[in-house]
Length: 213
Ligand SMILES: O=C(O)c1ccccc1N[C@@H]1O[C@H](COP(=O)(O)O)[C@@H](O)[C@H]1O
Image (cartoon, helix red, strand yellow):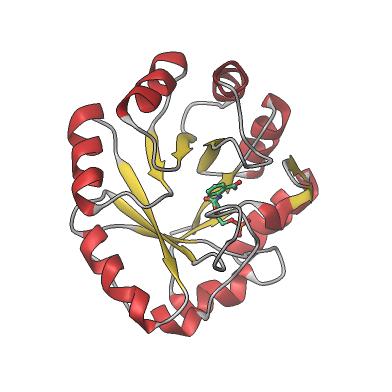
């Protein structure tokens, strides 16, 4: 089966169409004010409506409260919520129950000590996103182009589907998949020409490389 690919941080309908045409399985819409990929609800709705059926629209939030999540879901069609902050396992379970959508919880990994958290979240989330842990004091909790030592998760498995993220690029994604056994990958800054601007050729190259083409 093909590796499934999420292209995160799309900011225009054209970028979303190009990612879908290149074969993306998921597109990510960022709702985090400090991100160069942050969208207003109106912008996000325009991007989401451009996405063809069959491509899942993922709303990425960071420690969002219920009101913020409700506003997103009222404004645009969303297929999955990505929680990319310090949400506890209890909060993940609450969001799943309250909003009736699959929830993917991002977990930052830098060392072996970060792995037990993945086990905890994998018991309550629909998917876990295994991302690099941001450096202390980093401005963004993700989207930094930072990778982690992939050998830390080689041969590890969780009771739910999982996705590999963090510093992936067209030139390293195949090796990351080989080392980790990931069947799903997620990329943001590694396919951009400038922060928040996806490069159509890099997106296509990334998807092809992830699928060994
Ligand atoms: O992309 C962002 O701007 C972002 C902001 C806040 C939280 C997460 C964010 N992105 C996620 O981080 C991973 C890794 O990014 P990168 O490929 O290393 O740049 C990305 O896949 C998004 O899911």
